[in-house]
Image 1 (cartoon, rainbow over the protein chains, first blue to last red):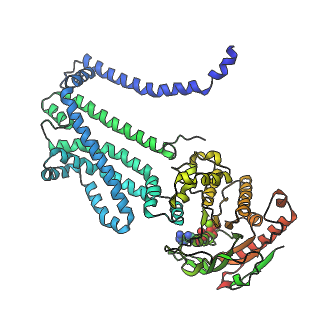
Image 2 (spheres, each protein chain N blue to C red):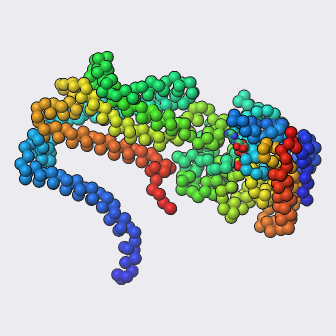
Image 3 (cartoon, rainbow over the protein chains, first blue to last red):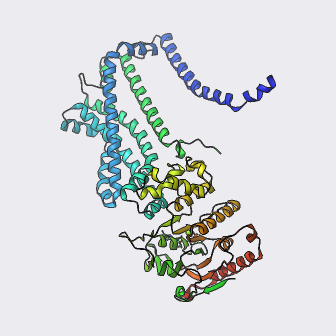
Length: 277
Length: 284
Ligand SMILES: Nc1ncnc2c1ncn2[C@@H]1O[C@H](COP(=O)(O)OP(=O)(O)OP(=O)(O)O)[C@@H](O)[C@H]1O
Ligand SMILES: [Mg+2]
């Protein structure tokens, strides 16, 4: 009996299951150990909370100050995602326009580059002057930062279409619109996804930096302002709590964009396929 | 058995005695192609492709075979000379309304689309719906033996299977003229022989006209009803051989091992050697 069951259970599956378990367990245990070491260090040395709060205190603060932090998180999320979505739409549309003709590209591309290379902190005050709503101004800053990587990736992607496929479309008399929709845009998808991943991270960073520059106050302020505010008041545990929320947001954006990229490319693009030989 | 019809004859097309079907599908007249970097790829190439022929363009690498094929397909413009379509009307975009199927040297599939959608593409570009032509597309896939792989992605296929998808795509519009650019160059001998037989079967069943670019003397001798041997620098037709096939269009394993085939290969091979040795000035 035993002998008959043995072969089936020594199949690859248990090994695979174990490696998948380890994949989650190893980083989780590592994170737990780091937090524990931090906690122990703070308690043993009696480090005052205004220098370095223990993880447990940060967690308590997160719960206690949720009423202040949560609305700020929502503001930051709204700014980040609306900036990202606008950048995705704008970057793609402009890229499509740029690849239509060499002249359009020559005429417009310099502006995109100038906007990109000028540090955002330097433009922010100007935008704050021109735009009366602080949140709108912050969103414009975040948009400008996320826009360029999406644009340049899309331009590259739209230009990298296999020439033979272009010939094939010509041969069958495809219209420009068919060529764009059925060939160029799908072929550029991997590049779009790269732009999305970079742009997603950048729009959060830009939203925070722009809010630092704006220094706005009141009900409509985001996490960056709460962070600055906590610093002024030497409320370091709350500063850490805001920081944790920002990191978590960044990780979530990264995970989300990676999943989106994987889902859309998994059937056909090398970047999302497991190498099987 | 083999007639060397025109060798260096100016205006060879008119001089060729054509037994079966005299109607030209497409004719090249003094086609010259110079690329923007100055390379003279084709020089005064003149050739008639007649209905029902299986023409192989045979020649050394770089002699302009692909260039000639692209010009026939309307994908590149001749610098001088003309491409005439006696039997078709020319559309507003300068393309003949003749249905052309083109098989590139690489499979050239869209990796983001499953096999079915890849084969469906030419019909889709003509504005047809997936539902109305499903049977037609499946028929084309069946012809190349890939009916069961309609839902697979190109990544999940072998090189030979991808090439067959590309052939199915070329066939789905029921073209009158099939242009193939070294379609089996990268395949192993067995797959290659099988696909050779498949193409021959299609040729006889569907009454196609085929222009087939190849490096291989053996492939050209096996497949063709006519071989145009091209010389390099500049590219032009050096020898034009008719290979009458009174026994019908079929070829099989028996033919592959026959003396007839061996003789044929030797003759074609000699013509190719001659073509490579021929001084380019001869044509000028
Ligand atoms: N886009 C191009 N620009 C410049 N020169 C070109 C271009 N395409 C081809 N050529 C030149 O034209 C000549 C003929 O090229 P072509 O691709 O037609 O050769 P071929 O006979 O198909 O060769 P092969 O059997 O190796 O595919 C070559 O000398 C090549 O260098
Ligand atoms: Mg070639």
